Every structure is written in structure tokens, then in C-alpha cells.
Image 1 (cartoon, one colour):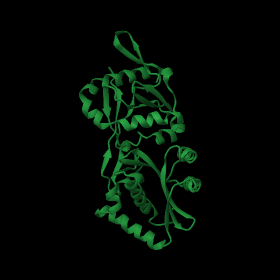
Image 2 (cartoon, helix red, strand yellow):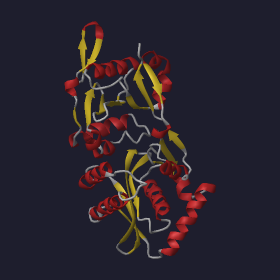
Image 3 (tube, rainbow, N blue to C red):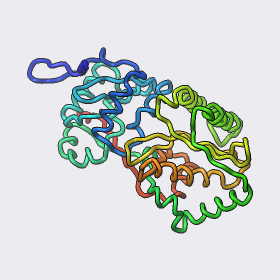
Image 4 (cartoon, rainbow, N blue to C red):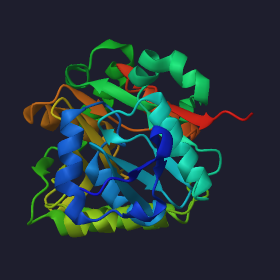
Amino acid sequence: MISAYLKIPENKTVFDANALRDISASDKAEICGLIAKKPCDSCERNFANLFMWRKMYKTQIAELEGSVLPYNSANRILMFPIGKEPSPKELFETATSFVNAKKSDGGFIYDIPPSYVERNFSEMSKYFEIGEDENEFDYIYDLNHLINLNGALLRKKHNLIRQFDKANPNARVCELNAQNANGAFDFMLEINRKKETSRTYGGLKNEDDAILCAKENFEFLNLKGVLLFAEEGELAGVSIFSEINPQIYTVHFEKCDPSFKGAPQKLVWLEANEMKKLGALRMNREQDLGIENLRQAKRSLDPLCLYKRRFAKIKTQ
């Protein structure tokens, strides 16, 4: 491994901007290994997410001592290193070096684990302004709660699932596999195409790029999924997800045909059952990005908690 930290006089460290390179398929083993050594519930700490969205974010990485630092070059944002955690001083030196290399405005660092900030708040405060944004919190759900449909909020989902089952007595579910993958991904792209004509949704090209990447690499990325058929050969919904760590999976894409009432609720229930079969305890449904209809939908599923990722930027003198 070539370290992106170069030793210079007086025991200081500086980031070598030339060490940045585009993330590639060959990085999977290293990044997944580092994630396994330091697991957390963030949907961003998932190789499939980094790889599928690399076109939109122009994702690059730098290999540090015992860790990998993802860099969103489209928005000039550093992500917190995956693997060995740096000290706050090392984090400051790295962020400063990105600024000096004209690759960052203010040394902004995204997706800092809340536990890291809590442990190091005093020292971090010497170097950084620390913040959070509720639009960027991940929604975390207890799988048993979603499966059992307990409580007032989930009882409403139960009723919608019963309506779907009653209206579609021949409904069936399949796991994502090599035989049905093309049809599943094409279904999602078609749903996006129809949404493009609606004022409710903005452009979905970036998500289409991620879906196409998933389609081309679903086995390589170890993607899992469920396909909900209302009738034989008639898809009502598709969900694609993958492991963050053995206890939690993240939902990457979830699309339903709106003509089938109750299909979205049925699909979430099927996801929860499939994730539990895979040995997980929790589901991550990612951020709402401040989009009101997404926020309402995620809250209506009665989350266990929110993953309150932090961000930091270098203090100005």
C-alpha cells in the first residue's frame, strides 16, 4: 500500500494530492476488509454505494496508513477515513493538506461517526467547527418491528398489505438472481422514466446511472433483492439492498408500480423478512435529503433511531 501521508521535517504530515485516484472494482477487497474491521451503521460505509454512485460524485480514494479516504471530487468533499481512525490532529492535517492542494474549500469532512466525535470532542474542537444536518441522518429500523407490524404507525401498513394481498391472490415474491436481474433493473428504470414527467420529481439521471451500474455489477457487488409480482409475470415492485455489516443492510433502490395499492408496504415487509433470513437485525433506509414526501414515508415506518452523522470544517482564524 502506498501511503498518502508523507513524513516531512518536525514530525508534521502532509497529504500527497497525487495519491488520489479513481475508485475501481479492484478496491473492493481492501475497502470491504477495512469496513469489517471498523463496522458502523452508516449507509456511506458500503462499497456498493461508493462504486454505484462514483460517476455522479466522481469518487476518488487515497490510501492512508491503515485506512482509505473516499473523496467526492465533484463537490470537493472529504469523507471520514474507512478503517483505522485518525487522531483529530491527523484529521486536521489531512483536511488542511486538501485545502493547500486546492481540492477542498474549508477542509469539509463528511460522514464522521457520532461516536468518534463524542470520544474526541474536546480535541476536535481545537481544530474544527463541528455540525450536523438532519437532512443527512440515516433512518435505522428494527427488523422484527417491521416484520411484526406492531404499534399504531405500522398497523396502518398492515392494513395496506392486507389490501394488496386481497386484491392480488396470485402474488408471489422472488429473490434477485441472474435469471431475473435484467427485468428487475429495467423495471426500476422504467418507473424512473415515468416519474421524469411528473413535477413531483426532479431529474433522475444520476440515479439511473447508479441503477445501470448495479445492473452490470449486481453479482460482483453482492447485491441482494426481492421482486414482488402481483400476477404471473407482472412486476409490482423491486427492492435492491446490500450488507453494511452483518447486523445491518442498506436499501439502495426501491421502486413500485403505483397502480398496485399496498405494494410499497408489502415490499418493505418482504425486505425485512429477507434481511432477517440473511442474519441481520436492522435496516438502513438512508437519508431523506430534506424532501418532505421522503421524510414522511421514512418516519411512517417507525424508525428505531437515526444515524446522526457529523461533519466538520476547519476553524477560521
